[in-house]
Image: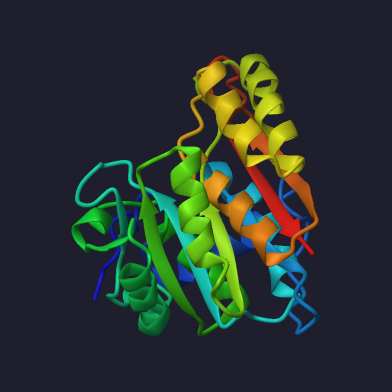
Length: 274
């Protein structure tokens, strides 16, 4: 079992308080404005970008994505692409342990996980890379809330270049009935004005589903998007899976919550659709 590393910090450690905060993210004016309508509609979302900060800051942008997913058919497997902030273990690592949150245990789809690390040369099976890392963990309670029981594959990515993104995407796109989630925050610790200007350049490339242009923009302008490798991988995978358009559901910053616009962290909820 992989036990929570950031419960009580990024989100509440008790089941009741966690459910309450998740629902607050949905009903808040910065969120979708109401609890999600759960359904079994056709799933046209193949991949998405979701933030991974504390729920009090980024839960609203995440809630826009999860509200949309709630009304669509649950995939066989959710593949969550995290960024290894701690830089421990392998550069690209899958976990095969089941993950525990205050809402219960989430089962890893070991068949898919093992297929990835056996068939994709870049991917290792390494639990150390997931120790203490929050970018994948914080997505699980939202997924548990909208799906109930589900299976997933946690994949941490430290190498953030286009060739790596394309190679991983080539492996992911061969999987059947999966949803790809790229976990990333956008500009870090700049003014609200600066964050919006810089993120605007990146978002333009993402919404064009232009992974090459997106990565080049990050490097050219020295953008502080922490999980741009996972985002590029999600773009490439979505394209190979048949996505035809990207949609920005919500962009915001920590300043929208705190009122301090001098030094913010920015977040976005984006989906890639058929």
